[in-house]
Image: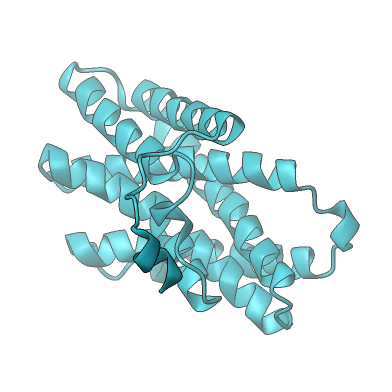
Length: 209
């Protein structure tokens, strides 16, 4: 039962992230194929990066058709949705939910493959932010995770908490729920209060260049 619920959350997170990817495509005036590609990249890109790094091949996205299918359907749905119906705040909440769910999913995969604590944390982060990094690069932007308000940091904290809960013997299902909610809350607080890590200072000459 727990495995079924977690898999359901995984698909849910895939849909949520696919929405954010498709919306970015629409805002950059991509055609329908471009929007669908970005939906797929964000929906399954992080998981592909994670599985490739830890040797979980063939990657899940290529062995379970449901993941790519929901990304394609989601991308098409967003493409045909009137722009006025796409609310920025809703997208931010969706992004936070996806970040939380994928952090927990990735960390759980790391535990399954007997990674070290650092490996488990990074598995969670790669899953959560990998697709977004690819999306931003594809549309010619500096990846959000390198400059945004408490984005990758929230995922890192979630991964650390996952390791702690596992070491304390907390059941997998409860660990998953706790970490997902924690990352979601951290991300939304970061967005609400504009929290971010310190940025390096530049000289006047560097700014001009």
